[in-house]
Image (tube, rainbow, N blue to C red; front, side, top):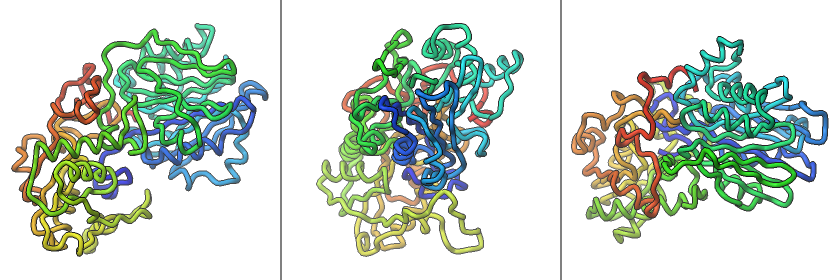
Length: 479
C-alpha cells in the first residue's frame, strides 16, 4: 500500500490516518493563509477527504475569524482568489480522512466557535474513546452540535472551561483532563497559538520557526516545505502556548508511559519526516534490514510496493545483497475521485493505479516488500500481476507484524473478523495471496526498527492497548 492508496477506497483494503494539522503565527503581521496552504499540501498524505484554513488578525477587531473549508484535496479546495480573502497573521489548517463520522462538508475542519470569551479555531488529529459520553453530557447542559465529529466535543470543552479560568491554555489543559484517547491539537485564540498532545503521545506534533513566524505541524516535512527550521517536538502531555513573548510550556500532564503510534514510522508519515527524534526513512530502511535477517530467501530482485514499501525494500537489499530495483510504475494522477471499474469490466483498480515493468521481473525470483496486509485482496492482486508479468517466484515480505486487532486511536483498522491475519496462520495467508513465501516483521523486533526506542503503541498487532478500549466498537459513531 501507499499513502495515496493503490486500491480505490471503496475496496476498504487500505489503511488511513485520520488527519493532519498545521498552525502559523506571524509576529510581523503578515498574512499566513498561503503558508498554511503549503503546509497542508505537504501533509496531504494524512487525509484526502476534506481540508480547511481559519485565520484571524491579532491586530484587528478581536473575535473576527475568517475560514474556508470544503471536500477535496488541498489544491482542489483552495485557489488564489479564496486564499487572498483569508486575511490574518495567525491561523490553523487541517486535512481530514474520517475513520468515522460522515464524509461531509460540515465535518471538515478547522472548527470555529464564537462564544462569550471571543473566538476559538481548532484542528484535531486523533480519536477520542469517551466522545459519545462527553457529547451526551454536554448536550444535556445545552450544547448544540453542528457536526458528528469528536473534535467538536473537544472544542466545546475548551470553550466551557475558558469561562472558569483566566487563560485559554488553562482551558485546554482542563479539557485534556476530561478527554480520553488520542489527540494532537492546534488551537487559535485571538492572540495565541496553542499546541497540545495527549499524555500518551499517540499522534505527532512539532514546533517550527521561520524568521518571526512560529509553526505547529503534524510532521517536520511540512516545516521543510514552508522553509521553517525545526525547533522541537511537542512532548506527550505538553501544552505549548505561542505568543509575541515566545513559547511557554506546561508539562504538568506529561507522564512516563508513552504510546506513540508505531504505524507513523511504518506507513503513515512521509519518509522525509522525523518524529520524536527518529527519521521515518531510516526506520523503514531498518525494517527491511530486519526482514532480510529474520526471513532470508534466495532471489534475484528486491522490489517495493510504492511508496512506503520502497525504503524497506532498499533496506532488505542492503542487508541481503540481492539487487534492488523498480518493478512498478504508479499512476500518480489517480486521485480522490477515481471511479472503480464495474464488475463486468476487465480492468482491475490495481492495474489502473499500478502497472508492472515486465522486463524488470520476467524470469526472476522476486522479493516483494509491502508495509502491511489488511484483508489480503490487494496483496493477492499485486502478486498475480507480478506472476502474470513473468516473475518465476514471488516472495512477500511485510515490514510490520500481522494486524489482529482494531485501533481506537485514529487509525482506520477494520474489525477483527475483516482482518486476514485473524484466525489464520502465515502459511494460510501465503496461500491465499498466491505467494511462494511470506514473512512478517516480528513484534519483538519493532523497537529495533526505531533504534531501540520505547514507548510506542503496538495494540493493532498484540491487543495490548495502552488504555482500556471501549466496551463496544465506537468507531462508526463519531469521527
